[in-house]
Length: 205
Image (tube, rainbow, N blue to C red; front, side):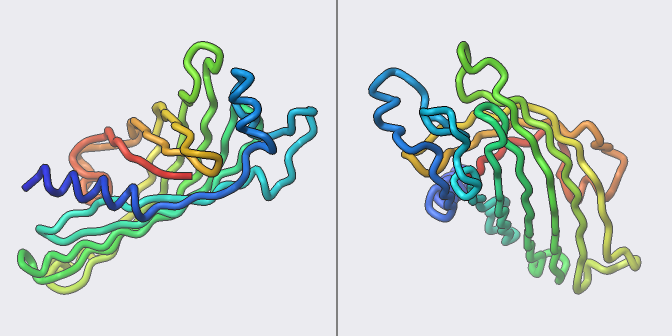
């Protein structure tokens, strides 16, 4: 059953995420010349217009069926330079514990992130990743036992992202991150981030 959940999550990520924003005026010509497509400037060295350096996307996360849970994570990213990307994102996750406790869990998040391509000549498309993530939650139904209905926590994620271009319009971004603020003794951290300070995710932008 776990393998089916993982397969369905992968399908959802591939079919429900979108991104757009032109990254170069002639990517095919540069590829034919053995060069990587330019991301923030034209081949003549002029800066690309703002609208051509902004990318929109996101993904679906936390998809499972027992208990039922699903999350969405929209992202807006900006190509600051050829090797640096900055962005903002939001998230919402809904979990229904009806068969367990008779209630629902709602999680909300907002984040700022930066990605810097460390060694483009040796290891292209690999970025150092820094992210500040603020999350909160609220509960309904019998999950309110004890009067604890809300909570929040802030995570500082450090790690790496591999960004694989897909066509001319967007990239698949696989991130492996570690939450340096995580505490296993914090009930809020356990609810919002799970039982481990590590996370692996895929976003498209």
